[in-house]
Length: 224
Image 1: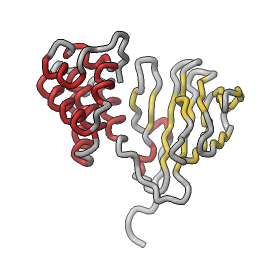
Image 2: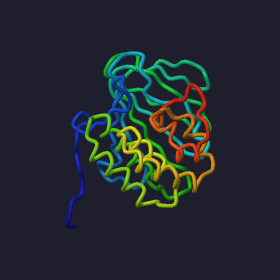
Image 3: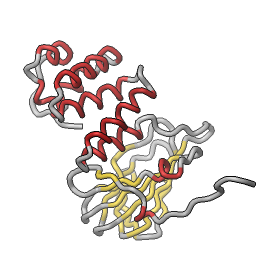
Image 4: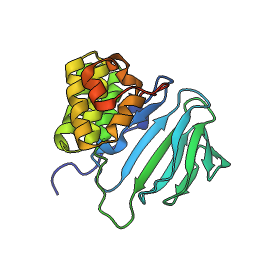
């Protein structure tokens, strides 16, 4: 048999991307190995108390397994608290309400998932997640390249255009931001509300083109 048969890498050696401004990092394991059978990623908290698994239910039918590979986590499963030191496996069937927080600095949780009975497809928005990771690291050019690639792969999906609009608005590129936002609104009427609620567009609130899409902004919007 010719060609590359296997790969080995330490989690700490994978490229990491900041998820927020508090030190949570994401390591895209699926992307690194180009895995096509299931999704798998790692999240590492810089400090105790930081969320390492967002609260969600996976209503779409995905089955997930979480592995605490370093540190200690506290899982909330159907609002019940469970201690999860390194080596703990947490299995969540579809529909399970789950979230997790780091109980120690440096806690790393691996998330593995796929939808039973269906051929796995990588998330179409993985590139966007990577793009904003680059943005938080200060690499705007690579951020834009990743998000533009996501748009090119799915030009008729509103999410890519909306996230591109967020990036361009943050960078003060008004025309590019508004053009992307207008395209997103053409594809999804709910974009008007999302644009009103997203603080990324604060610099555009008085622009007639923004107002034509979103109308008057609501108070207390939140960024992406």
